[in-house]
Length: 187
Image (cartoon, rainbow, N blue to C red; front, side):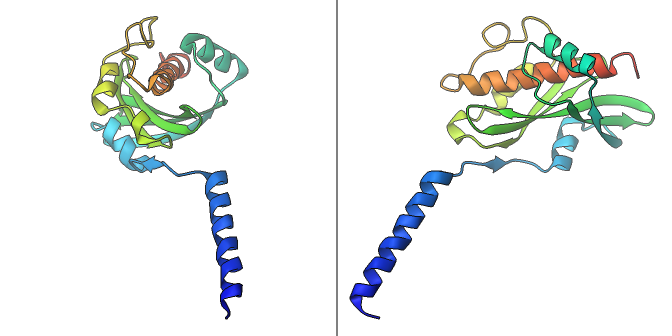
């Protein structure tokens, strides 16, 4: 193959590669645990786990949105219920929501009394600079759904990652509100 033929092919290949990179962009996605591993991490005392996908009624959706004071984009609620014997030990709510422009998937476990037990990041598609550290997530442990469960009130923001702080806090508020509306008093 002549040199004249190689140069246009190389140029075309570089152009296509650059175009694809600019359209797709660099990937930052990180998946930290499988669904099953995440459930085991937030419901460690559970001997068995029942997973449910619940379709919320319009009324339940409105109540959860109002209580959470956070966006609830779907009528589908993904929850794992942990049991020790016949006793419920906790509820784990999956929530995927935008962080900045890309999604994060969070898992929030709530005790049978409505107290947040643990918050875990299952997947995070934003750059690692915006990833909330484990120590920051621990501030939710033991909290209940209350007006103070908001960034700049009872929850500290993450310097340089305020949208991440807000996204995780909204996931916790949604899980707490969903527990209250869907499960509280039913077990």
